Image 1 (spheres, rainbow, N blue to C red):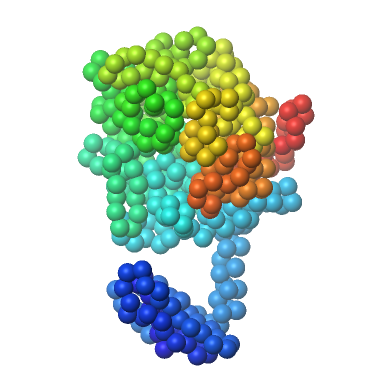
Image 2: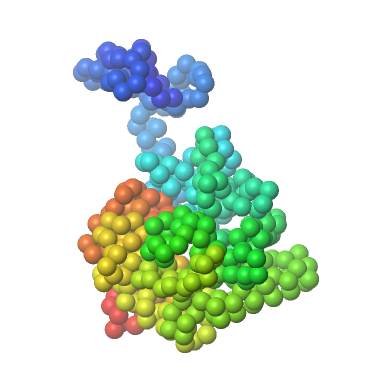
Length: 440
């Protein structure tokens, strides 16, 4: 006996009695199976048709045991360092493993979706963090994550906003964190032309005439959808975007197939870094600038502090000032995306307050490369404790640590694995954080 619902799943009753309910109903009508006594059913997914169910997969216990073995192999690969000091590592690995799907439709490679809830897509910056978390133990799967959006790069070089099995959206783009991410991935051939086209998109399609600095056309392009940086205007030259492109052009210079191209990208990176400092640094902070109006403003958004990703490429007074401002954003759980004292702060305000995984990882990395290791250690420790307390939500209430929105988000799990793995490596090398800032 078979029981159908309106999705592409079929249930085969293996034992017990079952009565189908609403098997041919439409819309929001209730559908299901009424099961009596001891029973067992097999649930299978299919596309257009399926062969009759076969018991070749074994009993339920055998199937469960095989799945557990598959997951254990995955966890051992991505978190071989896990132990009592990293109590959330296995759950983090499970969040990634359980959201990994086979290629289908526009999903051209094995893909880690952002969630199996409603955020069941691949967005074109989220995938970088998942790739980094997988890189150490599963390099082929890591490269699949990195390359998937590039499989849909358009003629202008832009990446899609998001990809799922049934659609590709180009309504926005996402920030160019890909050069930053590449430094953390194992070497791979043929990535240079993909990165060059993506970088050239920003330098041609997203620079106003006569301007050195590129712009976002909307807050969604930055990945920080409703950050207060975008309140005055929508088409904005921001310091984070320039910083990401400096890193991306440095990576192009490193990967260039010939010295001439390498020199070109090295010079372009120098010019953008110099323009960033000359045009958007006031001596105390970075400002944003309207691409059309030319007016500048500053906000209490952590986004304004993201040029810390340049690390020691920033002059010492600049990265020291940024580090002090970042420290002022810290709550007990990590860096709030809007300063907690800001009139615009909201506990569940998306990018107007909550703690997010990607901003935390980027800030922690930039601080560490700039030499602010004690602060980097503390940010890592607070975020790891947050995940151990509240799981791997899309974002977190910066005051209470409560998980918000989607409660099982893969880039949050990836961030935990990245930070925990790096911390364990430092511990093994005998590097200890500054005890004045608390345990790590």
